[in-house]
Image (cartoon, rainbow, N blue to C red; front, side, top):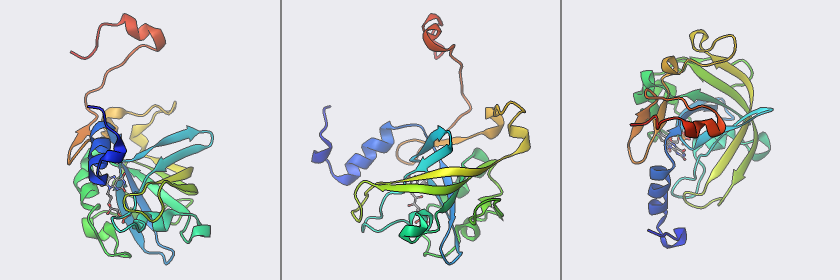
Length: 218
Ligand SMILES: Cc1cc2nc3c(=O)[nH]c(=O)nc-3n(C[C@H](O)[C@H](O)[C@H](O)COP(=O)(O)O)c2cc1C
């Protein structure tokens, strides 16, 4: 099938994107409003950007009426009316149902922490709390928001954040900063309502040596 995105409805483009760009890690993003009310929502358009400085991004799309999601209203820079801060908590198996539940629509200012039963813990460098149940969290200062279609339904927004502090549960990382993937038990988002675990993993030798190996996936 050859597809010109311009011929598709927004919902069709969305289905194509989330069904093919898989698996996606899930940022469970906590923010506070300028008035100090906490907010929590999952975003699977999420990734690392670079390590010098340590930088991440996530992408809250505009609401169907073109307005900004609460997370974006809170996380955008102070010069744009936000607080300029957010925390990325990692979505893992132990509390994944609560992550999904936090995506429900709650009135602006109502805390998803209370609504889904999660525990806020004070952050070290930013105002939004981290999620105690999350084994890893990145406290971030917002560097920039790039808007691909401001004010329009489903328009994209890239929120870029510089990591000012990282929390990782002691048993997950060794002294060489290798993470125990089994213990982390990260969950990914697939298309539709599907999720995946990270339980099945395999190694490849680096570079061209990878071709010498028998196909590790049978
Ligand atoms: C696992 C998961 C991943 C999601 N990823 C995104 C995403 O990348 N971008 C987005 O705009 N919405 C995403 N959503 C939907 C938002 O979480 C949802 O719109 C939420 O209500 C936004 O909350 P807020 O208005 O408090 O920011 C996702 C939902 C789930 C359950």
